[in-house]
Amino acid sequence: MSRVATENKLIKIIKYVMPIATIIISLIFTTFIVFSNIDEFKKESKNLKESYIVNQKKLVKSEVLRVYNELENEHKKVKEFIKNDIKNRVNEAYKISLNIYKEHHNESKKKILKLIKDSLRAIKFNNDRGYFVINDLEGNTILYPPKRSVEGKNYLNIKDNNGFYFMREIIREVKEKHEGYIEFNWKIPSKNDDIFYKKTVFFKEVKPLGIYISTGEYISEYEKSVKKKLIKRLQNLRYGLNKFVFLVDYDGIYLSHLKDEYVGKNRIDLKDKNGFYITKEIINTAKRGEGFISYISTVMPETNLPASKTSFVKGFDKWNIAVASGFYNQKIDYMIEEKKQELDEKNRKYIYKMLTFSLLIAFILFAISLYVSTYLEKYFLKYRKKIYKEVEKNKKKDILLAHQSKMVAMGEMMENIAHQWRQPLSIITTCASGMQLNKQLGLLTDESQDKSIEIILSNANHLSQTIDDFRDFLNNKKEKKEFDLQNVYKKTLKIISSKLESNNVKLSTHIEEVVINGYENELIQVLMNFFNNSLDAFKINNVENRQINLKIYKSANFAYFDYSDNAGGIKQEYLNKIFEPYFTTKHQYNGTGIGLYMSQQIITKHFNANIEVKNIIRNTKTIGVRFTVKIPFQ
Image 1: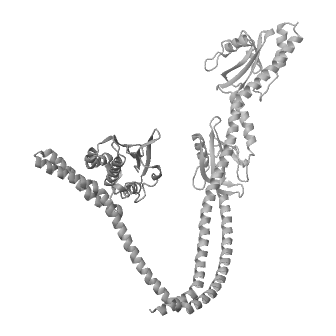
Image 2: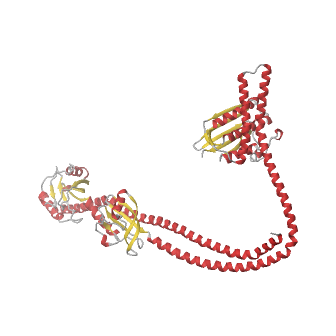
Image 3: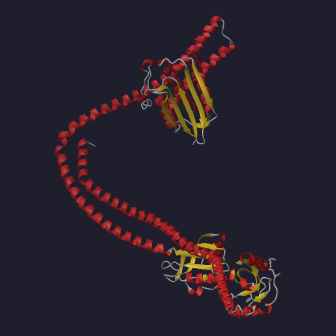
């Protein structure tokens, strides 16, 4: 296709593509917005449902706990109420008796006691469970309204079903304290059974007559009356159109419910349409402590129809009652449906507006495109030669940039290899020369020869490995493996030990067994770089007592290299630059500035680790530098 044809095609594209593209993009954008709204609606519906359930659970739980706490408080107060009630009753009887005594103190004791008996005998309270009893301090019964036949008899040795001689204890307390409380088990006179019930009794001495008056209350009977009053109060407790608290005893009888016809009925076999035993599960949950259950309720108050319901249940074991309240999931479905209708209407309005706007923009763009294409058509020839010249110029520039980039990459790699080879080659030369000299002098032994050969081979292998390491570093295709950091130290020491000795460097180490996953040779390269930098710094700063410290240890989640020397440290203004490529402070030693940069790249990129550098300062003087490498196990 000729350039002219291409230009004509471009003119047509400019003329027609923009309006068409605008319409297509508008349609795509509209579709995207609509589906985004639908997707957002689904997410919002999900969040709304989850939020509704969480909030409703909190609400029903708080209402159940409020009723539970009310039951708990009433239960705790039962004994206190009983004690106050019977004490007040006895005090009233005491006042009556004392007034009779004062009015008739000139009469005989027998007559006074008869007047008191006649005054107190007819008094009953607490649904006829309460009455007054009079005994003397010898254990003789003077007044016992439920059964006159026992009056005049001695019951000092009477005891309850546990063998407790309560009469003796009362008389002892009367003699010592004149009044008090006592608890024992006794039958309820109005019941024809042989069951003993826990009873609380208050007694008080009428000292002038040598008698005491007492009355008592059965805890279980009092609890029944309290429970009955409380349940009656809770019967109409509602908090919202569809929310109410209901009570079920552990036998399945509904004690309180929104539907009056359910109250007093045993609904232990109540099942929902899925065969779920509602009442049984409520009781089982209550006996376990508390929890939420879901089921199909028999009726939703708002609709009078069955509906899915989630209830919170808590057991009040002291009275064998399950306290429960729930919410209906159908409510959130209504809310979501309303949201959906709002979204549909919103999408319809948006589509209409977007299409109208798109057609208007397309018409405007068509007019603009027509003008632009005409303008381009007129002036295309004028700029064609200029464009051709720029294209040719850019092609040459691209070729030059590619060549320069390749040369820089090759130069960097050669500098890195040369930097790493310098010391091993020196060691190999030294060992070879040493062997040759010792052989000429007749001092070469098998042991020294083997040791020198081992060092030469180790350094030669390291030279070979360095090439692979740099190639792998650039290609990032090496395979990780597990290795012990002790081996990293040992292999490094084999390479560097002779140089440390020749430079009179004292090496202090603490090396723990630490296994990590990664590239072993790269850590050797890093450690070698630390050693070489220290050796150069010792020479530059003319340090006499040369010391290098190396610690390798671990914590629960990390392995650590802690490397330090006393070579004079790094100038403060250079600390933030030492990891930059080509930055060096060793120009007189032909430093390339690539060693620490490469070390940082290896540690951070290949081990996902961290390296920190700090000067060691003692008495305001910088004496050395410390490198800390922190490698995560995972």
